[in-house]
Length: 442
Figure 1 (tube, rainbow, N blue to C red):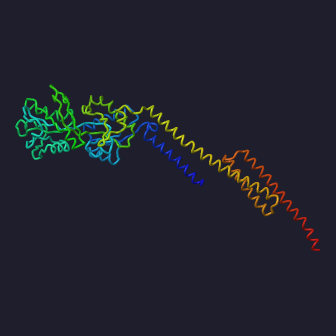
Figure 2 (tube, helix red, strand yellow; figure 1 turned 30 degrees about the vertical axis):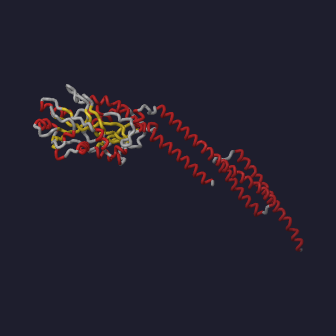
Figure 3 (tube, rainbow, N blue to C red; figure 1 turned 45 degrees about the vertical axis):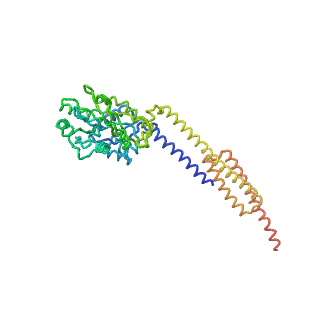
């Protein structure tokens, strides 16, 4: 029974200690290391998103020692998503319509790419359905996912699409070879306002944006996309464009983490993204599209709990976390202390029983010393040698007190004297019996 209890006690101590260490390492890395290093899969080198993240990483390393990001450039966002799914990186830049966005946890929205339909000046088209059976110009490099969702919803035929650079939109619209131009791009500076300006230059008059009024219905079919509104004046200019809000839908480019990223670290990255955004906009206009994710909980694209806690003002302060850590330490101590006391008491009980057994044996040998034979006394003396060795070992190990040792030592000394006296008496009796035996024989 005793070995089993020892095993249980040791396993319990190891389990509690390991659990405490793992909790500290994952939840409070700053208590162990000055920095928490994370790998980040970015887009291809040279892209706007990669440049924004590179600038963010530089500012991050200069401002805060807790979190350190190590960029891992990828050829495209598909490779970035695969790296996150396979657990080769801690964070990755992925699209909202990729599986990795659903598996991971969203920390920040880096940009949104939407669909835009441009009409020539004086166009009579008022809704997208009127584009059926019309020739449409489509910009080269348009997002294939967004374009497919747009065409399928309205029943537009790919055979009616004419792919071309966006710079050619103005001439083909003016020549009436197409009824409208379709392109995708960021909801900010980029290809959409550039195409608008090119059409205006060709016509010497202002073109217009076609409102995608059914954006909500498109998103209902494709939940990875988001129904958005291009607000009046988003693209600037004089007069500002657009001159009224335009409805459309978009795919989001997200900064996504592994699900196991500690809440504290996720919240810290969210805070730093928000605080450094203003600095980056001055040198990188693309950074203006960065924004915090919505705080509504989503089953499709879950936001990291640490990010939600920060955005909702519920993130624990460092003081609160420190207090919680000490409470955890107190709880661990409260578990370990009784366990250690129980183990110590079991050891003391075992030693007490062993001492009692040795003492009883010494008393038995005292009785034997009075009536035992020479052979029995020789065996008893050998046994006393073993008891003496046991006493010295216990004394050296600190398992018995010196006064206990001295008590046993005196008893063993007295017992050996009794054995010696008994042996002498036996020897005397043997000598005295020999003459009597000889006289009887004579």
